[in-house]
Amino acid sequence: MPLHGKDRVRARLDDDVYSLGALDAAVPKFRVPADGLRSDAAYAIVRDELLLDGNARQNLATFCQTWLEDDIHRLMDTCIDKNMIDKEEYPATAEVESRCVHMLADLWNCPDALDSIGCSTTGSSEAAMLGGLALRGRWRERRRAEGKDISRPNLITGPVQVCWHKFARYFDVELREIPLTRDRLGMDAEEVLKRVDENTIGVVPTFGVTFTCQYEPVAEIARALDKLQEDTGLDVPIHVDGASGGFLAPFVEPDIVWDFRLPRVKSINTSGHKFGLAPLGVGWIVWREKTDLPEDLIFWVNYLGGNMPTFALNFSRPGGQVACQYYLFLRLGREGYRRVQQNCYDVARYLAGRLEKIGPFTILFDGDSRRGIPAVSWTMTEGADPGYSLYDLSDRLRMRGWQVAAYAMVPDITDVVVTRLLIRHGFSRDLADLFVEDLERAIVHLSAHPPISPSAEGSFDHHAVSTEQLRARRNG
Ligand SMILES: Cc1ncc(COP(=O)(O)O)c(C=O)c1O
Image (tube, rainbow, N blue to C red):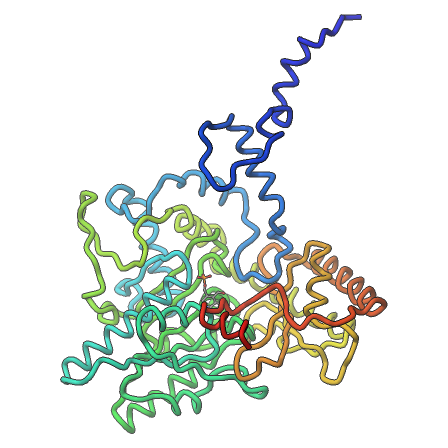
C-alpha cells in the first residue's frame, strides 16, 4: 500500500482549474484587471458565464442558424484570421465571395448572372441599407438630370423589419409603411399605388415578412408599377427584402415569380445566416445590372496593396462566413438545399396540425411553402378565455428551455397577439414532438393555475423600438 502525503496530492489538486484562487473570487466586471489569469481559468470563467444564455437549438424565435455541421466549425477556424476587406491579402476569399454573388444572381434568375454585381454583408440589415442607398442614389441622379428637387425621398414598404426603419432614419428617407388590417396581412398593389409619387425612390416588398411569415406579392406589385409607368411615366424600382425567402422559394417553390424574372426588380437582399444555412454574420445583396448601383457609392480601396471596389458600411469583417456559404453551395447543391428546406416545411405543417388540436388557438400561418417561410404562428381563438395569455404560455415554456416569440402585431392591429415558431435546419420531427409535449404540459399547468393577472406584455420584443418610442410608451 503506497503512502499518500498531502504535498504530493496538492500538486495534482492545483491542476484542477476550479481549485485555483481565481475561480474562488469575484471576477472583474468594470475594469480591466491589473494582472491576467491562466488561460484555462479565464476560459472557464467566460464559458461558465455563457452557460446562462439560452440553448440556441431550443430558440424557436430566431430566424438564424443554430445547427452547423463539424466541417463548418473547421472552416470557421481556418478562416479566423482572414479579413474580408483585405481582398488583395486574401484573394482566394475574395474569389469565393464573388462566386457566391454570381451563384445567387443565377439562383434568382438574373438575366445576365455573370454580369450582375453584388457583395456579402454582415447580414440582411447591412444589405438593406446598401439596397436603400442605391435606390436613393439612382433616384437622385434621375432627379438631378431633370433639374428637380431631391430633398424629400420616400420609400414604400409593408410591415418591415427594423432595419428599414433604421435605413429611413439614418439616411433621411420618409418611410411610407403600409399598416396591416385583420384582412390584409401585408402590402398589396392597391395600397402601394395610393402612396407612390415622384419622390418615391422604390418599393420594398418583403419575401417572408418577419411578423406574419408570409410572402408579399412581388409580381402583383411589379405589374401595378408597370401599369403606373405606362399611364404616368413614373418609373419606380423594386428592391425585394428576401432575408428569409431568398433562400427558400428558389429551392422549394421555383415557379413562384418574385425575383429578377421581373424586370422591375433591381436588387435583392438575403441573409446567408438564416435559411442560407451559414453561420451568423453573413448577408448578401445582388443588383440586377451594374447600372443599378450608382458609381458614386463605390469606394476604391487601394492602401492594402491593390485597388478594389467596395460598397459596404463596415470595413474589417471576418471571412469565415463567406467561405462557409460557398462550402454549403458545394456541399448541398440545389437538391440538398431543397431537401433541408422541405424538411423544415414538413415539420412546420405537422406542428400547425397538432397545435390547433391542443389549445384554444387559431392558426395564422401554417408553414405553407407557397405562401411563406417554414414557420407556424397562431393567436388565441377569439372569444376563448383560458385564464392565461400567450405571453404566459411563452414564459412557461422557458422553464423547459424553449424560447418562443409572443408579440403584439404591428400597426394597425397591435391588439392582435401572436405566437410564432421558426422551424430551421436541425429542428427534427422528434424535437417537434418533444416541444408539443412540453406545450401540452404548460397548457395543463396554466389551466389549473391561471395567473392572477395574465401578462399583457412579453419579454420578447420584436420591434426594437427607438429611444423616442420607448419614452412615449413609458409615459403613456
Ligand atoms: C424580413 C427581414 N429583413 C431583414 C432582417 C434583418 O436581417 P439580419 O438579422 O440578417 O440583419 C430580418 C431579420 O429577421 C428580416 O426578417
